Image (cartoon, rainbow, N blue to C red):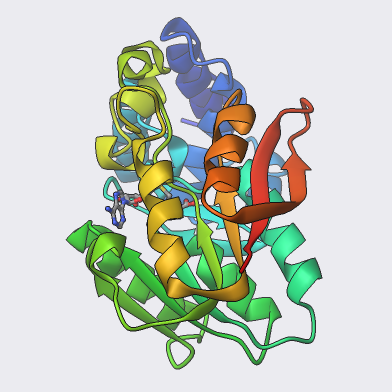
Length: 280
Ligand SMILES: C[S@@+](CC[C@H](N)C(=O)[O-])C[C@H]1O[C@@H](n2cnc3c(N)ncnc32)[C@H](O)[C@@H]1O
């Protein structure tokens, strides 16, 4: 069968499974099997594909039609213009998190902060920041053992292992450190809303990375309380938050001696990140 025909078969299969991005996904998956770029694929539409490759492609199409995210099928996701290894133990890095990274990189340009990344997952936040701030050092923690293994893999891949230490532990177990900057994209989805998430997320991404308890603020609150004891005075806490959490989180920050310095909005004008400093 030729590439063109196979792409259409894959795309139609995904379309019948209500995958909105059926055409693109079919192209991405066949590129993966043939080890070619999408562009190479599209200029060779009449080339024949071997039976072995057709079978492999059909397997991937089946996975995608079950709504497994493309990033898990490819085992990678681009973030901050870098490829990160991901698997079912790590959240798939999101574009809104890049907005937080961008703000931090701007604020700390030419400085050398000591940074803690709480709930590091794939390590995408701390690795991206340290790839920009050449003199900074960092620690990433996560309670997911398999998550930490992926973060270590990613720090090796981006040659930053000498600047970052990763620990499998809860942030509540961090003592005796004083950081200049704490960053976190914690789980912040309200437990009862978990069942309304899209299947791609609900069926495949780790619950541990998403579920923020009854009001979605369980982990955020604990991160704020902990940060009070492990941030230097005037140190910065950068928190990614969910839609509609801005007012509540601002109040908790205020009550805990944090002063909001910057906010970052997403493309829909929702505040998605609060950067505050710990006051005396
Ligand atoms: C929303 S994910 C963020 C992952 C990654 N930082 C990113 O932005 O793509 C939240 C992460 O927090 C971790 N986590 C949840 N509770 C934790 C705790 N008490 N201590 C450390 N990590 C925790 C989860 O395992 C998950 O990897």
